[in-house]
Length: 321
Image (cartoon, rainbow, N blue to C red; front, side):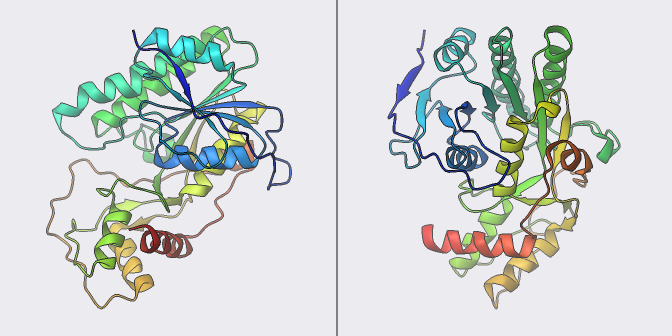
């Protein structure tokens, strides 16, 4: 049976950069810490004074901000229990996930195992650990009031919806303080999945290429990655957040077409986007959100607008491509 293994422990920084939010003296466990949102959250928690334990099946070989890395496969219940027993976290941020919104039948089993089984193992391990709260990363494609409870359009969204249901069950039956945050379309520096729209278009423009795109009709709420990390950090320190499921976005819908055209303007590219060369995905609903609950419970609102966020993102890809 695979074992939990700590990797590359380093001393952490202890500075807080936001008045009223501090993790001084707190121990945080972040699953999926090598991912896009997870990496930004780890950095933010360290800046707030947390002792951060980062988890991945493939931890990086080099770390920079002071986190302690653990290699663990959350699909294995015994490994998950051992991990929480070793770390003894005050708060668990569960972002480990098979992130693929495709509609292929081949995605059903991977999303079931990684997004649902891993979540249930973690919730089970957290029950009975006095003082431990859990913050899960859901999906804006789950049925929600803001999308008129539209059915999940993909295996990924279905598994996330089921995971949210289990979190609520653990809260009701066993008093586990669990919160679910549902980010919308997250973008920003450090997104290395080049199948996602913003990095794909950004890198195409930097190479002087014309990206092939869908019709661009889909409406999405684009939210900057550091704003999302801030929402998770706030939820991890909020007593009021337990039991809540909250949308995390901007409340502003922008079509894919308008987003791509804004990227072109920010870049100053003379090229023109080639819309309609790729088929639209079936059941792609508009990602409407209601951020009122997050504002009320967490005191959180997004700080970075789309144009500024795209400028920062393009600058990052220009430096790191």
